[in-house]
Structure formats: C-alpha cells, structure tokens
Image (tube, rainbow, N blue to C red; front, side, top):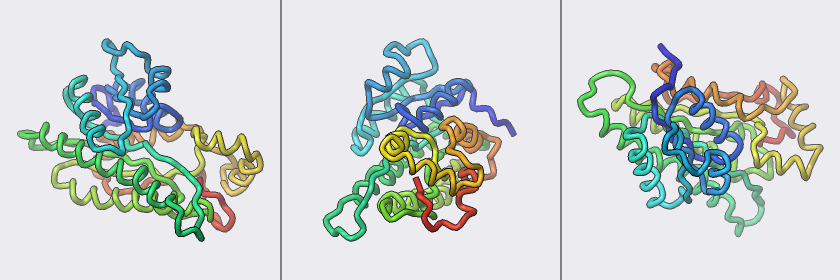
Length: 266
C-alpha cells in the first residue's frame, strides 16, 4: 500500500494556525490539492496568498458552526478541485471551565465547536464521497481524520469542558467508522498531547511554569512541534492504512503512560 496523497483533494479545517496549518502545508507539499479552511481570513491570506488559482491550494474563510457555511465550503472545494477525498477535522478550541458553576456555558461551547462542527462537516463530506464513487466497485472512497486530544483520557480540573468534547470526538470517530465502512470511507483520529499550537503558545506566555509541568510529565521531555503530527495524519489519510478504521492513534511522547495526577492535559 502507498502512503502517497499526491493528486488527492483534502479539506483541512483550523488551517490558519498551528496544528491545522502544519497539516495543510504538509499535504500541499506532498502533492495533494488542499482547501485551507478557517474563520480567520486575514491569517489564511497571509499563509496561502490571495491569488491561488494556478496552485494546488485554495482557502475558505467562514464560521463552520453554521450549516450554510459548511455547505459553502464543500461547494467551493468541488468548484476548485472537482472531488474531495480527504477531510481533516482540525478546527478545535480550548477554554477553561468552572466545574462548580451551573451557569458556566463552557461545555456547550466546546461541544458545539469541537464536536458538532466536525460531525456536520463529516456528514456533508461523506455524502459527497459516496456520490462521486458511484460505479466504483473497489478501492478507498474516502478518509476522514479527526484531531482529538489525550484530554479525553487525562484531564485537568480547569479543562473539564474540553475533555468532555474530545471524549465525544473519539466516540464520534468510532461511530462514524462503523456507519461509513460499508461505503468504503474510513474514519480515524489522532489524539495528541501537548503540541506547540497557537493556543498553547498564548498559555505559555502567561505561565512559564506550565511548560515545565508539561515536560516533567512527558517521558520524552518536550512539547511536540505541530509538524510532528502531519506524518501521522497523512498515514491515516492514505491507502497505507487501508484496513484501519475507528482507531484513535495516540501521539503524546509517552504522556498517557504515566500517573495522570497533576498532569495538565492540553
């Protein structure tokens, strides 16, 4: 089986910064047609450029919590590249929550941002994948990769809402994998530990000791660079993982192998 994604068309959400950007760039560098999707249009233009008509990349700016925006993203991808073969759900947010405040809306916010956006987009994209594969009797029809977190298993008191939402993403991955397997669409996820994303960079600016805590609880003793996830995502998107579906692949430098007490799960 080949690990190549050359010639495939991928939608990558959360592609203006950090992890999503690293994955989108990696895919483009390896020959895929890539739709960079994010809310932050100015950052997308900075990264991709305004004139992309003659390249293998495009960008789409919009709030993917809105159903119409999701439909427009898919239409823009089809207009640019005709098909869609890969979806990487990298649009995610981390916010603190107060476990003792019944008025705290963090859980609802996280579920809408981290779960429902990915679920709805997966549904739209899967329907398109099925339609474009009509008459194709064998081979992979499509691959969906969700970006999750070890926070689904190792939590922190301040990150309850985020942990709940990532646990839901893991279960969504398994459920969609079973439902879409008859259509030859695979669904997997990458659950990662601390990665130097834009959000984590902001946290570390305010709390230098937080980095030391993370590194002390990670056997490999460091925080991963965003690009280190890209190869794993490519593997799950490619036919090289053709018999893998419904799996949550952990990349955390060994973090979840240690006693979780006191370990921040970011």
